[in-house]
Amino acid sequence: MKKKYLLILILSVLVFISLALFKERIVFKVAKANIKKTLPQSKFTIKKIAFNPFSHLYLQGVSIKSPLQRYSIYLESVDVHYNLFSLIKGEINKVALNGINVSIEENIKVNPGKPVLIRVKEINASGSAKFREIDIKNFQVVVSEVADTKKSGQINFNGALSVEAVSMKKIKLSAIQARIDATQEKIDIPEFNLTAFGGSIKGDAEAALSSGSGMNFIVKLTGGNVDLQQLNEDFELKDKFEVTGLCDFYLTAKGDSTGLTELDGNLNTHEGGGKFVITDKQSLNKLDLSKDVSFDLALESLKNYQYDKGNAKVYIEDGNIVLHMLMDGESGARDLKFVYHGGLKFNQKFF
Image 1 (cartoon, rainbow, N blue to C red):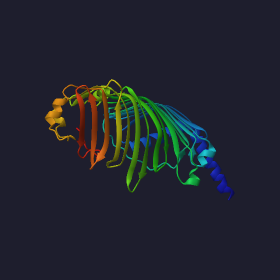
Image 2 (image 1 turned 30 degrees about the vertical axis):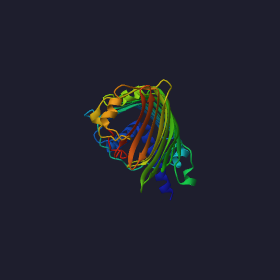
Image 3 (image 1 turned 90 degrees about the vertical axis):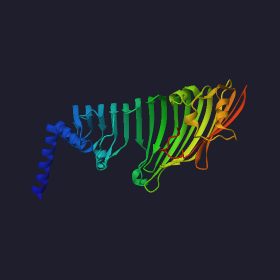
Image 4 (image 1 turned 60 degrees about the horizontal axis):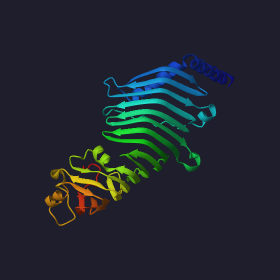
């Protein structure tokens, strides 16, 4: 029995000596092996490693690149904090991912590994990212675990997100702020604010995740001082219609993983009105009008229409998305109803 304990003691001493002498090399080997499993085509480098098996792991200058320049992932530093007690419980106290710079130009092959059986109590991340035509500038994320999983049997997180700007083609969102609460079954964004189309937009969102029925979601938006001309330009709709003026709006959308199930929105223009002109008959000729008039007459009446007051409602009727517009001006009132057939599916293009 004494020999057995002596052997365990000797092996333990050898392990600690190995960690002391070769800890940086061991960390690099383990990290490289895991990256190669997940991204088999990648080139992996680390500039500096500092490792203490009882307190922290620090990586500096972490780079993961595709040899064909399909993607590039760089982190200025990765800072992991833990202690002996937390490791015994299978927990890491804090992980900080600083100076993230991600660029992904096309689809990449990822081999998902087995789930890591270690919980992280707090994660901080900051940096920038580009996914094809989506450019995310200067984001900061803080996520903390807030539930005792031993009692609830479920991991609960809350977090905060801030982003300086997001660009998607011509659409630009800025000053994004959001709070996030999440479990394995639900993602709740109780509050978010952003600037877009010259105005301010706020709202909340919730998504319920289920392995059997997929996803159900609800999004509520409220906008103020939104510039309709800027919205028209950002969505590249000038070749179909032109609109100017400022407005306030609200929009509620419900749906699941296949598409929309409910839609309720209302828009009111500011005093002074603006202009609404249909510029392309062919692209809108497939749409239905509410009044019993020909499209040619409607098109003629909107060649250079100036409105003083405008209201628009959007909703679902008979499985289609309906946009009902009411406008009034010196040249008379306009009552138009556009029906987007089959527009409830996410893969359906409206125009």
